[in-house]
Amino acid sequence: QVQLVESGGGLVQAGGSLRLSCAASGSFFSINAMGWYRQAPGKQRELVARITMVGSTNVADSVKGRFTISRDNAKNTVYLHMNSLKPEDTAAYYCNVLATMYGDREYPYWGQGTQVTVSS
Figure 1 (spheres, rainbow, N blue to C red):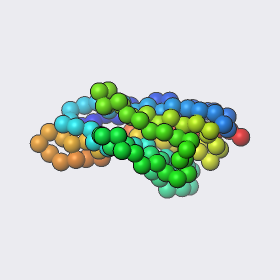
Figure 2: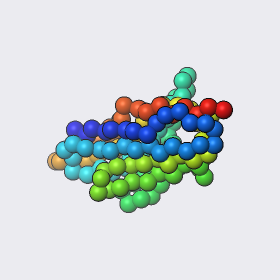
Figure 3: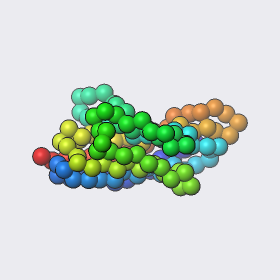
């Protein structure tokens, strides 16, 4: 099992910055890809950014140039650095990791979500 603890959400004015963190713990062989998704009210959950174990990233066009994803493999932690925030970035942000269990396959795990609200 993998436990994910997210932090860093909150209320910020447009143009401001926030940093989200997600730390993975538990019993697993490896943490593979780590990423952030978001879901606004009435909308589907969408990928924001994703990073592999070796550091390759995939960032949604809607946040490219404003958001950066990074990870600390020693701490099994992924970060989402959000700059130049816009009201349309308001959503619940969810951490997602792909973890390989000992003697088993890869499974996806989700965090509980952290709210980001951007005021205009």
